[in-house]
Length: 349
Picture 1 (tube, rainbow, N blue to C red):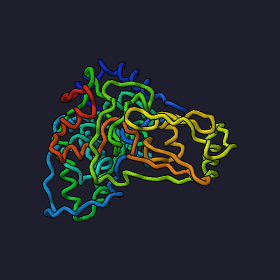
Picture 2 (cartoon, helix red, strand yellow):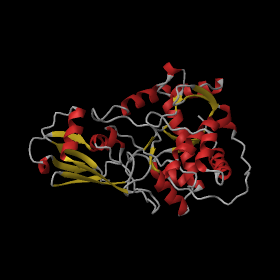
Picture 3 (cartoon, rainbow, N blue to C red):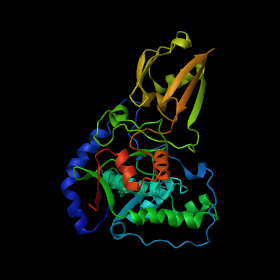
C-alpha cells in the first residue's frame, strides 16, 4: 500500500504481530483445505434477480471520506495488470462485487467496514509484493473487485445510478472505520449464508481467534439456494477420490464408504471417514464441490446424495444474516459487534 508518511509510521508498530498472526491462521487444516480470501462463496449480484429501483436517472454521489481518500492501493486485477487507486475507490468496487446492492443500507455499511478492515489485515502479509501490488481482485485470495462500468452493466440501466450512489454512501458513511482487536485490524472474513449459526475459526482452519467464534445468525427467507443437493454415483465418487490421491479404500459396498461423521457445535461437519481416510468437513466440502460444510450424505443403490444448507466457509459475518439484522432495525455497528466477538471499531490506523 502506498500511503502518506504518517500512515507508514502509524502502521509500523503492529506490522510484526500481524505477520505472525497471518502466518499462523492461514496454515491449511488438511492437504485439501485452503486458506480463504475475505469471502467464500459470497452472493454475486449477477446471479440474483435485483429489483429495478424507481428513482431519477441520476442520483447524486456522496463525496468520499477524508481517510479513505488519503490512502492509495495498488490492486492486482484478474487480468494481471496493476492499477493504483484510492482506498475509497477500491472499497466501492469490493462492496459492489461482494454484496448485492439491493441489500439494506446498514448491511452494506457493515460490508464496507469488513472490506476496509480485511484490506488492512491482508496488507500486512505482503503476499503480492512480488507482483508490484498490495492486494488482488481474486476473492479466493483477497477480495473480489468490480469496476464501476462493469457494475453498471450488471445492474442494468434502471438500477445502476441508485445502486452506485448507495454503495458510495456505505463507504463514505463509514470512512476510516476499522475493526480491531488489541489495537490491530482483525481478519474480517465473511461469507454468504449460515445454517443458523456461524462457525468457530478453529473448526475450519485449525487456529482459534477470539473474535471469530460461533454466534447465532438470523438468515432471511430470501437466501437463494439455501438448501442445495449434489448427487454423485459411486463411480463418480471413486473417480473424484482417485484424482485427489487420497488413497481411500472404496472396494467394499458403497453404503459403507462414509463412516463416523461428526459435527461441530454449529451443525457443520467436523470430520468424516471415507474409505478409511479421515477428512475434515471443509476438505469433504472442497472434494465434492459442496456449497458449505453443513451437509448430510446418504446412499441408495450406488447413488450418493449430499444435502447441503447454507453457502460459504461459515466464519465471520454472514452477509444474508447481516441483511436480516438490518431489516429488523440493527445498525451496522450492531451487526459487526454481533459477528466479530470482542472486536472494537477504531477510526483510521
